[in-house]
Picture 1 (cartoon, helix red, strand yellow):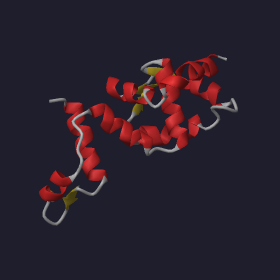
Picture 2 (tube, rainbow, N blue to C red):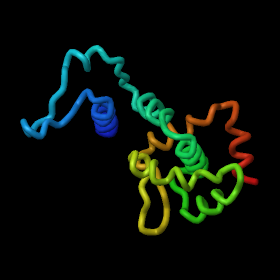
Picture 3 (cartoon, helix red, strand yellow):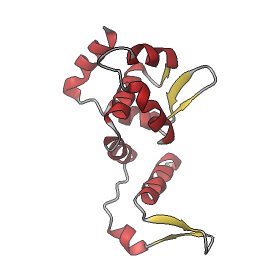
Length: 140
């Protein structure tokens, strides 16, 4: 299996209340029947896309922009873009993207995706019909 998928899947269960830690019993608890009844995907891209579609517009825009730049982007580029009308909210999306575990910041001032599948799912937030236009606007 894919360890990244397992981690994302477990986090998905926890965020939906299907897996929780019982501090009195000092163990994780779940209802297997309820989990088995859930529509569960075996596709990590689908799982990530579903998670990303629930994010705020600022975070989704940030992830789209980052995906167009590749696996990482310098904080200065984000700062520059956030001064434009079209991308003014992307700096506001940084904290949520960091807390959501989609990106990390390194010591050199770069934000990067935590996994290549996260990058791919973020790029897929841009519909195929809009990709050329999205890249064009970033390049202006």
